[in-house]
Structure formats: C-alpha cells, structure tokens
Length: 367
Ligand SMILES: Nc1ncnc2c1ncn2[C@@H]1O[C@H](COP(=O)(O)OP(=O)(O)OP(=O)(O)O)[C@@H](O)[C@H]1O
Image (cartoon, rainbow, N blue to C red; front, side, top):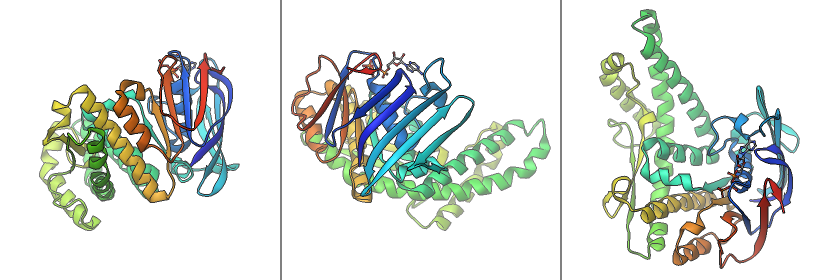
C-alpha cells in the first residue's frame, strides 16, 4: 500500500500542504513543534478515521477555522484510490473513496492500512490493560469489519448498562432492562473474545522471534491473553464462550448491583507481556520497554501483510533516534519492503535508510 500524494487544508498547523511521497522511505525532519507528527497523524487518519492523540476530531481542525480536509492518492489492492476526509466543527465528518461517501471508518481500513509507532506507545508495556486493549482493537478493527461493528455495539451496550447500574437505586424500574443488556453484552462479548483470541495467537507466532532478533537473542518475550475467568478456551466456538460469559455474569450480578459497576465482560481483557518469564510492565527497563512495544507493532505489520498480501504503511514517529546504532539497523532491515514514514529532528542522522525522499517541515510548511 502506498500513499502517493497528500493534500492538507486547515489540518492542525497546516494551512495548505501538497506533498508527493516515495513508495519507499520518507524521512520527515525539522525542529520541534513544526508539524512532523501532524503529517503522520493525517496519513493514519485516512486508514482508521481516528487519531492516536486526539480525543475529538475537532482538535485536528486548525484553531479558528471551521473545517479541515485530508485528501490523498493511494495505491492499494492493485487499484488507485482518491481518499478524502472532511472534518467540520459541529457536524459529522465525511469520508469518501473515489467520490463515493463511506458509511464507516471500517470502509477506509478496507482500502488503506497503517501501523503507527510513536513515543506514547511505551504505554503499551508500561500502563494498565486499557492501552493494550486499545492496541488490539485498533489492529483487529483494521483487518476485520465484523469485529469493528461488534466493538462499537459492545461500547454502546456497556454505556447503557453502566447507566442502569449507576441509577437503579434512585429509579428501580431501570432494573427491568438490566438482564436484556447483560445478555446482549455477553453475545457481543463472545464475538470480541473470539477475534481477540485468534489475533493474539498470531501475535504469539510473530512477535517473540522479532523481539529475540531485536535483543540479539538475549531476551525471550511471551504473550498471553487474559480474559473473563470462566472462559476456558477463548478460541472455542462463540456459543461455548457465550455460555461461559453468562455463567460469569450470573455469579457477579449481585456484586455489580452493589458496586454499581460493570464487573463482568471482555472490557477488562488484557494482553500480558512477559520478558524472560516476568511481567514486562513491572520489570522491564526503558530500553526493553521500547523494544517490546516496537516488536508488538512490527508483529502487527507482519500480520497485516499476511492477511492482505500488501505491506501496510508504517509510520514511525520520533522512534529511531532513541535507539542505539545496532537496534536502528535492526529496525531498518526489518521494515524493508513497504512504504515507511519516519520523523526525526534536524540533527538526527539516520544512516542506512536506503532509497527514498526527505522532507523538511518548518512551521506547517514544506521547505
Ligand atoms: N488544531 C490545531 N491548530 C493549529 N495548530 C495546531 C493544532 N494542533 C496542534 N497544533 C500545533 O502544531 C504544532 C506542531 O505539532 P507536531 O506535534 O506535529 O510537532 P512535531 O514537529 O512533531 O514536533 P516534535 O519534534 O516536538 O514532536 C504545534 O506547535 C501545535 O501547537
């Protein structure tokens, strides 16, 4: 997959930008706060219709302006696509491919896939389970539209159930709907667990060898799916998972009413990461944390390749400069093959980048 050209209007600090990219490596360099990450964010938006660092689309629109546009020419799935995202304050965003309006973000992922690695991704190892769930969700949503639909449905049901649990003492009639919401959450939750289990099994195959190479064969990384306790085999057929989820819900019903919290379901799932048999979250050093997080992302990139037959676009934000020379070389060897965008500061010298283009960004302009 290749982003051949991008045009930004009123996106973050870009008034107007037109840029044609290399199908190989694109180095985006410049001083701090000039717009390097903003450019990667725009490319990523065209595959997921979301940003890794903005909670709301309106944050992406230039301050003091009402609308922003991202347009790109993309070559993917052996075809040319013109992708467009129009973001407006106060109205719904509009996504289109070749002039045809898209109904969901999943349709964008059906054209373009990206894998982004940025400094905040250290949270994948260091933080609580939510960061790892987000990683799983972002990856699987790009590959499986059915998962994206189930996830959106599950989130809605969760919000409803939380409201019932929060307000039922003041309004006991709310309890009439509780079991219905719990049942639908279990049904949708079974879909999430099924897809997560399969995706994690594939991660278990590709990530440990990447991490082992990365660490010069010195470290062993293991991944483990942690889900609802009663689920004995997350890869079992969905109807088996459903009955085990219902069993867990039933045993937690009273506790949910008393605590007013939703205690049962895959919204508490985790992807445990161990290094040499101990928890990476608790024991990994800075370097090990970075290497493990990057291994997860590169593993995800390989799964995308196996699934679609094309390399997803890899976006590396401010990453290589943090690695020593040997590790830089490892990453550069590993990412050969697809289109890559790498941001770095002016003084960083990224050697061995091979074929490609460089772009100097200054104050939201291409110099
Ligand atoms: N909605 C917005 N409207 C206008 N400017 C914005 C908006 N959002 C962010 N900016 C500005 O964009 C600038 C560049 O941000 P960006 O994160 O791309 O920097 P960068 O070049 O990656 O810097 P660094 O090397 O420090 O990571 C910042 O100064 C920020 O204030």
